[in-house]
Image (cartoon, rainbow, N blue to C red; front, top):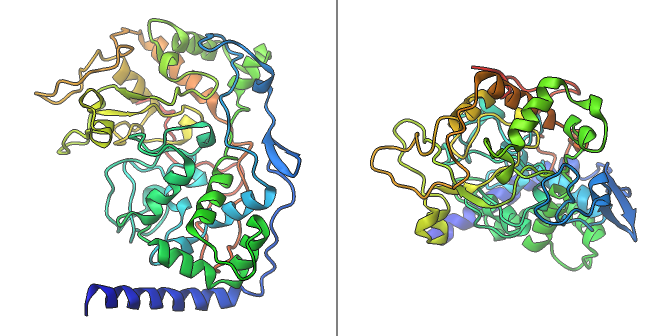
Length: 411
């Protein structure tokens, strides 16, 4: 059988699977939300972020705590956001209808996946228990506050959430679908046709297209906003929100000795830029060239996007390669001296903020304690009990339950 014939067989099989599960769900009464998610206000029919940080007008580069936010990708309707929520948790978007976006960006793991490196298509299970598929080159980054960013992926190769969404959807080793298969599966669903028509005013005779899917996923991911941690309450004027040790850790974080805040800049705790820091790779793995390869710039060899530290205590392991299991190991790495972890023969252009701060053990402990104050999941969306395809939704823990092995513990 030639390649075209094989592709046709796969597409027919996918549609038959979709038809079976969709028939079971067709009678379900899926109604898209009419109100905005928590933290957003409905203005002129669309959802706009409402945050205390928007009251501040400090100039760029201001080093205080009350720093304004960069622009957010908001302005979506409640229906578009809610449709994106269903799509995010629906395995129908993958080639074999067995993996959703949430398998690698799971609510229980800070919208990362709790693994050193992600597992691609064919994997089974959730989070650190996910197995069976091919291990990917890098970790799954957290999606918290991703709507503020203009560079996506570890190597910064996408400049919009719409472009980012299509990366894993169509990557052969991730969700593995194609634009044709994705559109065919969704258009075969009476439920999804109705929901897309409602959210995007698609003509009943029109078709769901990839651009509609990317827009809905963008709308949903832009509402994953975390700005109400204990740190935020301290920044907004509540001195009792942090302990003495945590305040000491914050002062270390902001000091010109440690220089953490130079790249992990409040209030997002990232500057969104690419940086070469000399993180070690797993044993036996060659140096990942990062943005140097993607962008074709020698000075960016080994460069990766500065990740947000929001909810960082929930997203272990750390770094693009999952090199460190705990936050204690992370701060120890930064305290270890410039370029100390590079393999023999490597000469990278390490970022100038990476120095040898020589912090004492109590200062390192205080720094880890401060990072724990950045945890806030109050804006977490509800995980749907079911999705329009009728396929299984990833299991999640109940309210108040935490994923095992968070990164805040000491070594």
